[in-house]
Amino acid sequence: MVVRKQAGVLGVLLLVLSGLQGLGAVGSGGTVDLEVGVFVFEQGESVAVEVRRDGDCTCLCDPITVGGLSVLDGAGVKVFSLPCDPPASIDSWIGRWSLIDDEGKEIPAGIYRLAVTTSAGEFRAVVEVVLPGEKAPAGHGLARASACGLSLSVYRVLDEARAGTKVVLDVREGLLIALRGNPTTGYEWEIEDEPGAVLERIEGASYLPDPALAGLVGSGGTFYFRYRATTVGEGTLLFAYRRPWVAGPPDRTVSFSIVVR
Image (cartoon, rainbow, N blue to C red):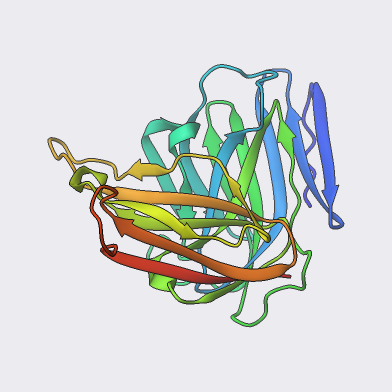
């Protein structure tokens, strides 16, 4: 963990989980400086981050907007950027990174820092990218920290391209299911089955539309389902895409095999 000295710090909240640390600080100017990690991902996987409020607001209670996501390598060189123009509310923004650089090339194994810039300050997550098959032992990379009731959530992402695959999670690890759809046609993704004994569902924005082109209506977007691994075990997540008022089988289904270790 990198600890950054900050002048005029009013308060620091430090949490330790699984031997790793997260650091959250609020400076005298009312600016958040928060960092969590290390989170381990294999090449070919995808990571998502979002800034969340944990319960009631204690400070920095004004609406908070996101300016974008950037990724720096171990030398501090920016390798990926995802600007948010115009800035979006933290309640309607999720930043996703498929472990590629700005040229669309797969990044090499190493340590990277994801930085989310907001109107309240900066939120960072340290990510270690490893080669396929080299995922760290259970319990690695599950730190969490907050400042003023604000935190950065980090998720492993599954979408239709990975339907039918098995994902191995550590207890307390976050999982985000991201499924493309278009509710303007009447269709929506619904949960058909979930392993409630091993996964806890997390509340959050269930659908985010694509940034619309000028004058374009009904372009579709992504349905999101958030989970946190809670207990060692396994099960299946099953989702169906249908018009809720139409009887009969759904238009299509996707499933994922979940193992929590």
